Amino acid sequence: MDAVWRIESPRLIAGLTRMVHDLGVAEELAQDALVAALEQWPASGVPRNPGAWLMTTAKRRAVDLIRRNETFARKLALLGHELETAQGAAVFDPPGPADPGAIEDDLLRLVFTACHPVLSREARVALTLRLLGGLTTEEIARAFLVPESTVAQRIVRAKRTIAKEKVPFEVPAGPELAERLASVLEVVYLIFNEGYAATAGDDWMRPGLCEDALRLARVLAGLMPGEPEVHGLAALLEIQASRAGARTSASGAPVLLLDQDRSRWDHLLIRRGFAALARAEAVREGRPRGPYVLQAAIAASHASAIRAEETDWARISALYDALVGVTDSPVVELNRAVAVSMDLGPGAALPLVDALVACGALRDYHLLPSVRGDLLLRLGRRREAAAEFALAASLTRNSAERSLLSARAESARSSPTEKGA
Image (cartoon, rainbow, N blue to C red; front, side, top):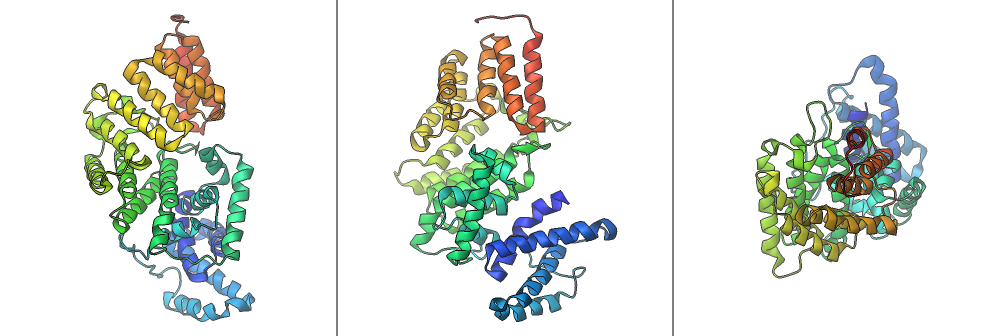
């Protein structure tokens, strides 16, 4: 049931929003359909097309709601006709998958609706992650490094604002499309990241979220072929997705980048990523590289190395220097420190990481002590490294990642050798 909901809920909410033109009502109808499934499927079994079953059930709930609310009376006939022609959930034939380049795609409409300028930047991203990614408020809070209550308030206020302002369920056109694009790119990027490295749960990855984000990135690239950042995002996600098959072992345990079997990388996706990056550079026309083009260039540098030891860390470090200049993000600073450690050694990177520890911006971010532990381990300071890995394990909410970090802590403790303390 959880898998079905993760896959179907974004499409269900998007389709219902197009029908009832109310985001909050659409989500409630979708959840009502989920409750009905929880009540009926244990006895009747999962239907052949669970998404169609959920959509038909949600439409029936919509009819009941409309009958109780005269302001929606004009929509009753349309929804009733759709239900009559459906002839029940068992034979309901939902619309086929939209053309990836079609602007009418409901998921894309939902992204732009959730990213409407009447909402704050934080609310746009949180709301879209909630609706399209199917994430809990806790998972979104982890992505934002803010309290869960803050995210919950943002989502509630965002829904109220959209309803109050009567935000249309549509993809904007003309200059407005360009103005809202940056927010949409960020949303797609965060959805992909949650799928690429889940913040909580037992699974290291959620491939469905990666696929949704990658599809949306490709759609955006088709809609705005002259925007380098759109192609940059598409390139970044293509290359990152190419590693999916190598990021876990046969037992499902995480495999870090430098330890991955690169023959398992998807070279078709890598070629697609290189092509998208080339398009980004072609349309940039002398303009400075934006954050997604820079990140794609970093990913391309990794993908160009047949073996990990052939990675051009000097180039990657220079690209991170440029990325820091356009993002001002402590997470990017942490990634830059990793590149510096591989280029110039752990001793050169440790002060950079210590400065991030001192500023406190990443206090609850598990990768900060994880990176620091790795640097200390490479410097021979094993007891300190073990403590950092243990701290990182206590901060992560992902079971697979916690096991990896705990194992690294135990391995660092197991050796009595202590050098460079």
